[in-house]
Amino acid sequence: MIGWSLLAASALSAGAPAPVPETRDDLRCFLIMALLADTSEEGKGKEAAIAGTLYFLGKLDGRAPGLDLEAAATAELAAMTEAEFQGQKTGCISLLEQRGNYMVAVGTAMEKRGKPSR
Image (cartoon, rainbow, N blue to C red; front, side, top):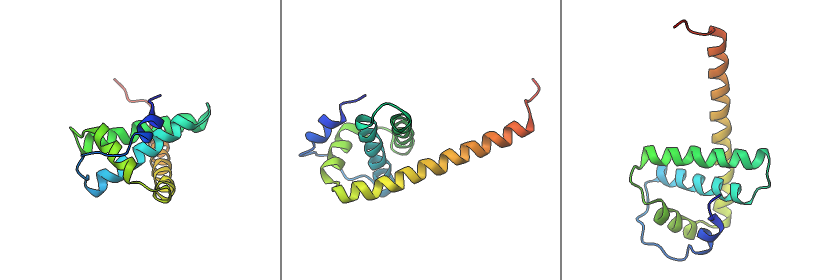
């Protein structure tokens, strides 16, 4: 994947402005998922972390178009403590599970309706 471990190791200083709280949460979840994807063994856990990385990247693109991702990620990695990482990880995973369950419910409802005629 991306060399997130290198980015994390170089996160000593950054000049990026602090993002608004919602963007910061999405950025932290993006970083957490990317780091999990980078360090997970092949399998469902890695696939879920990659999907989570893409989900939060999409949220960042929608919420903060033009965000300097490298500068913001570097600054956030430098600021995030291990305790914050662990605490936020739980929330990020929970949000992904909620959205996944919602997608399943939507798919089930659409399946019950049958195929639309064209």
